[in-house]
Length: 160
Picture 1 (cartoon, rainbow, N blue to C red):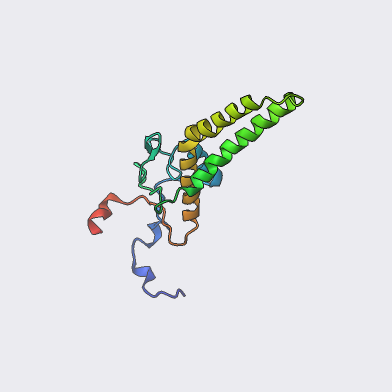
Picture 2 (cartoon, rainbow, N blue to C red):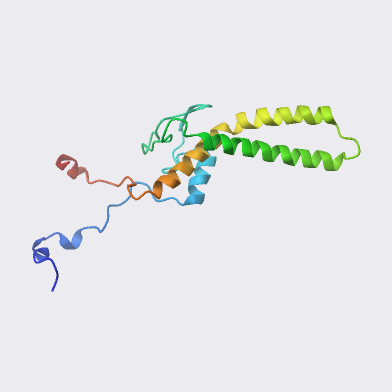
């Protein structure tokens, strides 16, 4: 015997889905970060999330995901950006020093270092920003109050 005496009275009980169908398929950590590296929305994968090279839209044009949760929230993007520039610089420095160790070309290293630490951050900025938006999205998904957008029955719109 069931705990609800009225359960058998609902004629639609058997054809109800257990949970609403998500509007966008769930994406894992690697998928969200890959989308961020490709300058796409981490939730739906939509392109066109930048209005210009340095300006990320406030929300995704397709799924309405808000990218910047708070003012100054892209400090992590700056860390990623400088981390990539520093990694490229260390690789360049290691290669140059291993090839020319007895005579170190100081002026060439200074010029290359200036080029790396100005060019790489400018080139990688949109990618680091969208990667950080993906990290924030992955953190948001762990929040118990997070609700993924779901498909709605168009007939139910009048009832809301």
